[in-house]
Length: 198
Image (cartoon, rainbow, N blue to C red):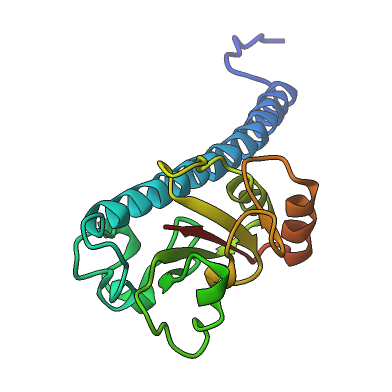
């Protein structure tokens, strides 16, 4: 009987290599998914911070935010990645972004629904279409306190136009409120978060 010199791998060895590759690929996909979520969340925080800073800088000497909603894209304060039309601004999670004028005090807020009447002394930034985890992280983020930050409050699942201060209605500020976790969980994977600034 003649013996042949065989080189190469056996079928069992190849199946073992394929199994190892499969396990590593599954782990890599899970890691990639987490990394992409973290990137979108960081991009959203950067967008909000840049947007608020740009709006406050642009209107800083004016004393009010009259005309902000209509002119938000014309003023050059919107990052280009968000879009170019006020009705078509998007966030990294592909949800809509709205920027509206508002009021800061309780006496003036009642006029917001019908007409602003006097000058708009605040503005609201609303992000829609957020996954639950992003909603929680963004709703409990620290946007500062005091006159320097201009932060008034945040609402979950509702427009913040009528927010007049901290702890009014369903308003949360600076981290960790279990109510924010519940409200974001109730909205599921299509949550809305609104921040109000002056």
